[in-house]
Amino acid sequence: MRLLPVWLHVLGVVIWIGGVAWQAHVLGPLARRGDARVFAEAARKARPVTWTAVSVVALTGFYNVTQLGDLQQVMQSGAGLALAGKFMLVLAMVAIAAQRDFAHVPRLTRAMAGVDPREESTAALRAIGWLDRITLGLAAAIMYLGLFVSRNAG
Image: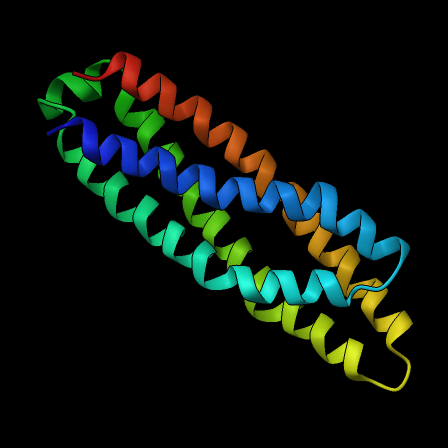
């Protein structure tokens, strides 16, 4: 039964981060060269899937922490400190994802409906691009810490 929560956790990460990577490295560059409407629509439609994946990652992550074993052993192994760092980075990543999805994607959508959409949509796409790159960098650090925790705890 221990495999299911880990599998769900990894599946949620793949869906969330895979979607960010696709939008950052495929749709984003296409939108900057042409019409950003496709990007705005894709980002809007992906939002329920993304936030479902974020919820699965958070819930299974909390559950998986309870399965690490004796707290004293986890703390002595260094996994406790890595876990605290991972938790802080995940909180930052969720905040950045929320800023992207609930502030900048709607800003892009409004810009596309405006009188002079080119200037405002370019700024929104640039902000989304930076937030996506930060998210992907944090995801790499979080994955490293997760592997450290799984190797050293329990």
